[in-house]
Length: 345
Ligand code: ADE
Image (tube, rainbow, N blue to C red; front, side):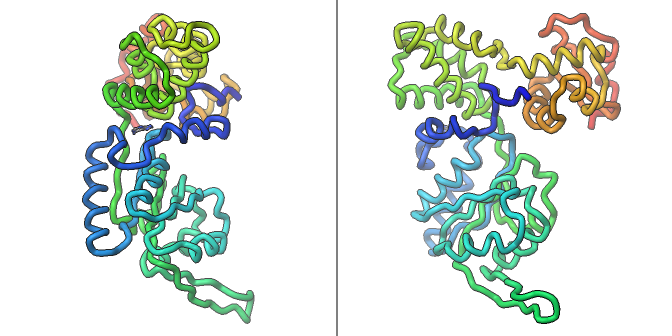
């Protein structure tokens, strides 16, 4: 399955050590998400003045935009520590007991993919969020009894790419809810400048970083990953400096086109454009033709092609837009032409 790719928004074990080094650790270093940062500055200052922990925070938005980074930044700002876990890693409520009871006042419990918390764990977490109390059931059957264990006032930071899948009771228990947006070109450029300085890569040509920013799909994780690939390329194939020519050659080798699309994206669009004549077609059929997992296409490929207006999701399925047909050099199909007459879903 072609999920291991340079444009992936997923963090990978091989990518993490280098990526961590480039992440901001303080709010003052954080670039972009200006509204969120202002909300957080106020919440932090208020919590500190009242000597209380921060309120529970829910961050939602596409992967790679800085949800985990922000949890670490918040802990730094509050002078506390962060414990990381994820929805799928928690099968039973009791899986959380050890983490919750070890938290000190003001510590941050970060739960990634919080929409994938099993319902039993969700119900277990409610009293912990509200009253800093855990109800643990001892023994089973007739002799079952519940004991209450206290935990210290902590802050839950939940992260999700699918806010719509969160249950209403869980969502309502977060004091601050914020959607992370894709980064602008200028923000990505500023992030790349900071990263290039940290990596000590000479950039004689200002256009070089701009090209990387343009191909990063609004996502800092991708921008930093492309920068590292380009740095490798210039170290081995050029003189160690980042010029526009080096960036072009390196990104061409990675299969990343001027819009930031890679082989998987183009394969998806081409399959839709040729086999299905531009659609509309169901995701399952498309995935089967491509021999790909529908979830991968939905989470990894579609968000960006939707964002740049290459794809429309209609009641009858996925369909290419005229802009996509032009980009791919395909004859525009009648379906794509009349697409916007259809209600989208
Ligand atoms: N590196 C990755 N994301 C960043 C951000 N938002 N600001 C600064 N550096 C970053």
